[in-house]
Length: 232
Image (cartoon, rainbow, N blue to C red; front, side, top):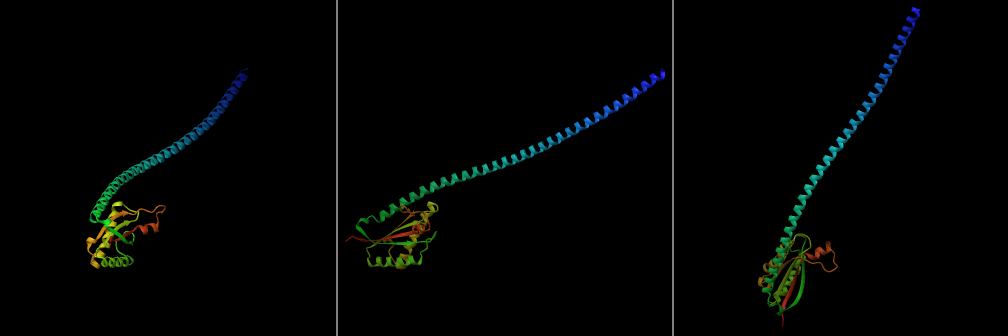
């Protein structure tokens, strides 16, 4: 009897040990799988955090670059505004200068109604130049002959520039062009400067329907010469 009880107890103990070992293995297996899943999730979250950080840094750089471009644009807008203000002042100064020149011209040529226009010639100039060209000198030779043939004849000069560039600069350029014509007649042919009435007109106005372009610009760079003789 005692032996049988002992055997039963031994068998029960062995069964409990086997069960405990199996339980520990099961726990270790499931714990390991759980740790692996947690580690994978952590790795995924770290990767997402790095991507988010990279995107944030990229966005920050883009915002900074945009801010710099905006500052640059603000500076350019301010510069353009200053140039526009200066251009308005230049235009006003040119308009005033032209009025004064025309008033002086009319004062010197106050007896204009007593004269009749005899002839008109055009002298053309290269871009941004006031030097006389050979064909221009040829035209002036004919003008000088007409002035010498009639001591009472007078000359009217109006200088023009093309439509490009600042108004003030073009006005000065047209003054230089009429001065070049005047010097040629006075110095080369001895024409009395008091017989020459010259004014710089600034930019020429295109004819109706005429489009800006090479041909229109070349025709605009000119000095118009009008020869007047006293009415009989």
